[in-house]
Length: 128
Image 1 (cartoon, rainbow, N blue to C red):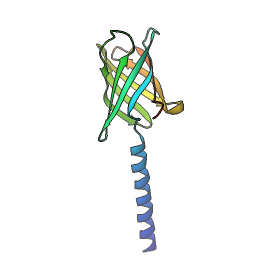
Image 2: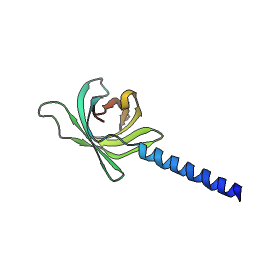
Image 3: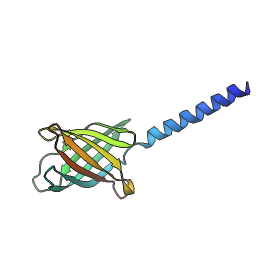
Image 4: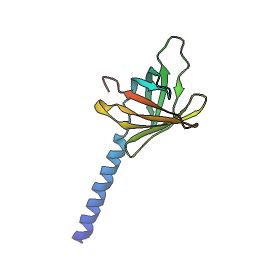
């Protein structure tokens, strides 16, 4: 009987730990800053609007230039093994995989459907 109680206790602790870990993988809502670098090496400053509806993370990206393009909305935003993954479209589908970095930021590469790669960095809001 003690073994069964101990096993149930360990199972409960494990499940609580997994639940806490899953909830922890999200981004602070608000305006993030950062940059994107295209396959040719040209870098542009961007802002990201991050919001959360229930368990669904929403991100849109705006290039910081006068009369710039409309915001790019990211789709299929999720975490996998600590990486932030999503897709967006700029006349071709672009798949991004960002790793956690210093200060709560994320950085990594984005590859388009033609196999060309660029870089992206997301820096959290100062209050986030």
